[in-house]
Each structure stands twice: as structure tokens, then as C-alpha cells.
Image (cartoon, rainbow, N blue to C red; front, side, top):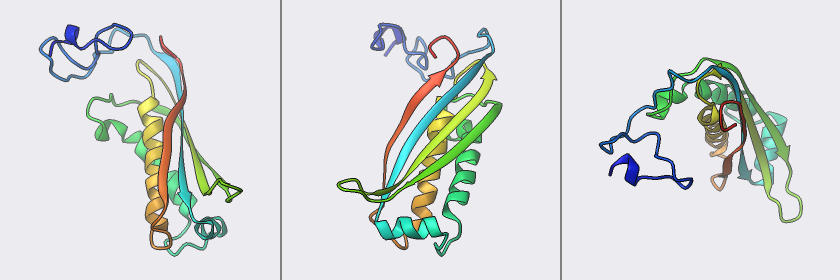
Length: 167
């Protein structure tokens, strides 16, 4: 399918499809370097006892949140190795934070994850922020699965982006 046949919701052509319908990396060489930032969030739902063990630092595999934070930071830095058409970026900041939320009413126990990523460059850092959240969530799951196989990763999403033409 030609790029002109693959119009997006706004009517402009898809940026990762060439005129022969082949996937390609977008050429961002002519774009100006600007400060860019993206914020992503996600949630890991779990049993109340699992959250208590994580909070107390009593999981058999070690400090879940410290490990998940490092995993999220490392993942953001490796996004272009994981997502085929992402540009390698020099990240100036990656922050991964957690909120421990006990079960309350209908709301289950959960760990809420937030990642913020910054760079000065020609393309945004949305994928890096989403990758950081996703891998941090997977790490929490991996370290807690022996205690709680019912954990669920949910609501991974981009919350905000800034910088560039559309930020």
C-alpha cells in the first residue's frame, strides 16, 4: 500500500511507510534540536499481601522497587534496540517512581509506576517513557510471581509529551 493510501486520522501520510509501502526509519536530520519530555504511567495490580511484602522489602528475590527502577532506566536507554524504527537517543534524564496503593473499597492493591524521560534532540521520547514503565512493571511481576500469580499489568499509557512541533 502506498503512503498516500495509508493516510492517518488527520489526513497526513504515515511517517514510517515509504512510497512503496515499505517500513522505514523517519529521516529527522532536518529537524531542529529542541528540549523534549514524555511522561508515562502504568499499574501493577496485586493481592494486598504481595504489596505488603514489597513495601516491607521482604520479597525473596530482593528489593523489588529498587530493581524495577533500575530496569526501567536501563530499558529507556535501550528502546531503539527493542523497537525497530525508534531512533537511538542521548537521554538527559530518566526518572522512574512508584506509588504503593493499598486496597481500598473496590480498588485493588497496586503499585503505580511513573516514568519521565527527557532529551534535547530531533525526536521525542514517548517510546522511551513507555518502555521504562513497561519494563519496570514486568520486573515487579517477575519478582513477585512466586507469591502472587494473579498480578496484572494494566493501564500503560502516555500521559504527556512536550517539545517539538506537536508537543
